[in-house]
Image 1: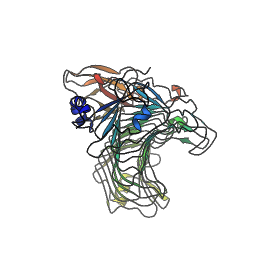
Image 2: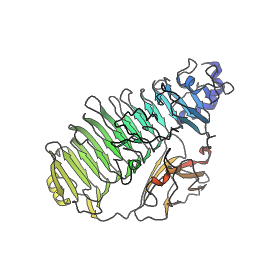
Image 3: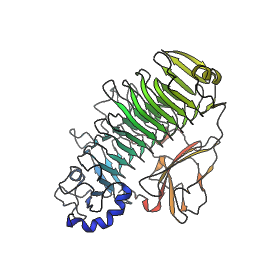
Image 4: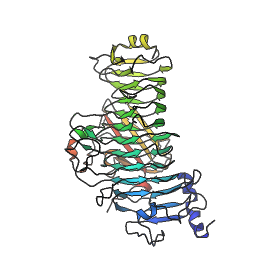
Length: 506
């Protein structure tokens, strides 16, 4: 054991167990906006962020790098490399707001927060771009006058947790050159720009070749394009995804009035395999699993989700679709095939469908580009699906609350509220999250750094959560008046223990 690390190890031992990184011999290093490359990484002589991420020789597997509050400007690249059993942790200092502004410093700066290396945990940063330019006359995905940066996850088994990512060119790139990994517990919103062709920029753009990528417990809303976009060309791979506990709504709306894109899309010009979609909640442009012009896919499990906006499933050899609630004006579910419907390897059961209009049918099928509308009975007879499922013509009336406690911070959780009756206040049961006497605060995901929606000391009774419209923060370079209303019919919130309250940036 390095003797210089002994005292720090006593303090960080228990914290490392909760965070999933560090060990009994972990050292802590420090970064601040006033740090330098000549620093030692101590609290008295901190590093600058670029130096710390470059992988200084002093940093070993299991160590912790604490980044102190303030704004760090431009793009950065991390080469930090831990081991599968001893991850390095790079974290925002508790209670301090750490902001990375990816506006490029000069023409050589891509603005990206590039995460390479391996086996490193990144936790608690805000990543944004202060450039006000949000529209271009240049079509395509790489206009030269839009340089907003992104969070690029390209290393092996990296974990990005509790980030607040907004107003970038694209939120996250989660790429197949890195094996496995996690994006979890993040808020991702307002990313992208408007081009002459369409809106560009997704919350998370993901591909995967080996291992399993986990996209878990994120809140993704109001991008210029898609929320979650798991997509690959013929040369890419989209194998092995666990998509769980995410809340997504109104993605695509920044492109213009009435514009909506899929809250979640999985599929591309390459087959997808090992896809798990469960316990998610979306409201807006619907969910598509299987690309419209893609090849036949292998296996899917889609269960215990609430999709307000419809569901499309295309060309899976094996699929289990069960215990979902799906809502749409018409064609609440659409089953597609490039040629003939693949039904032999499917199990569809115990789903609950609501068709709120119905003028274009209740469900739909499409084979080789040709298809038609179906009643539930016709759908059951043709596919053999949904014998025990129900379909209701009309609006749902049941309140649904999705509570997702953070596995990484005690007392923290994401909450999604589907409130079709537009109740002004809904009860929120926090008994699985908090203990009586524990202080908490709840903020809107649409104004994470703003005032509390409710706060207090937990007394064991349901918290009364107001569904009053929240004045959202305006997208950079735009006005908040362009944002469509959400509350009281839908809401997304973050529960925070009081000691996790984040200070305002300087």
